[in-house]
Image: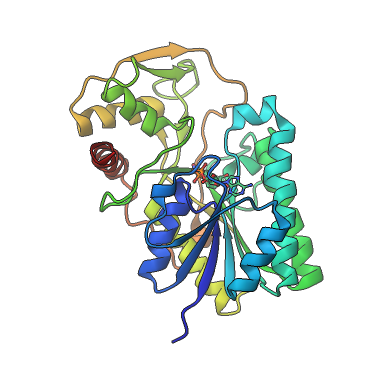
Length: 329
Ligand SMILES: NC(=O)c1ccc[n+]([C@@H]2O[C@H](COP(=O)([O-])OP(=O)(O)OC[C@H]3O[C@@H](n4cnc5c(N)ncnc54)[C@H](O)[C@@H]3O)[C@@H](O)[C@H]2O)c1
């Protein structure tokens, strides 16, 4: 069979680098384009890395002329909600405008399959839980808005140019490669589990809980943590469906289970066997009380089933992988 080249933009980042492993294991040939503004060169395992920006039209033309891509997978975004509120232009420029350049060049080269990292942030403040795809879309920060804008562009291009896309709205990606080849590394780190693990290692004095007066059992916010390997498996299924001719699709990706911040810290104490100090800060503006996915559509249509839905497994993999990678550096 012919090897299929897949362009993975943002493939040096946390989720993109895990995607490379999944693509390789499934027999695809991923080519990475990443400007390394946030990602790590050493996270690109067994794939070619082209260092550059998705806003660079000349570079994109060169890459698309060199390889005949079966599809593009798009992970290249800025991801910090709080920063997006302070610096909206940075987010609209990178997450929106730069993506338009990518889409334009891609269509010029007649590549019409697109897998897009969208987010639960498109829903804004939940009107009901668990959140399905029929939930109203009302993003409340520039990060979520930039993703929703791009989803709408994709719908238009679907009608005008026959683009076929999978818009995958993830809840909280977490965990790490079960074999420990990759870990979660954001710059700066803002995600709960790696921050808790830093506190376990004494790399930070304590983990801050932002608000302990929410109307939940222990007063802390509830989130749906999806193992990054399960997330990548859903991408693979969506990619295969597109390559087999499926029409455009939008899916929520989460486990449907909610864990409070306090519960995550408790699980991390059990997994790491370390003391994890906690301090309580004020609530953050725009933090919903609870975000839990209804991913029934992806389960039904893609036949996707998370292999690692247990929080304990997610934290254990994150701890093992980050420990291993620290030892190697
Ligand atoms: N991590 C999560 O929990 C989560 C949840 C929902 C959605 N997402 C989405 O998933 C995607 C990946 O998230 P992540 O956690 O792996 O983030 P990440 O920051 O680890 O990865 C993003 C990668 O994109 C690269 N990049 C950014 N702008 C670029 C540009 N203009 N040109 C080329 N490369 C560029 C960065 O260098 C980085 O390697 C993002 O689009 C994010 O919005 C993530």
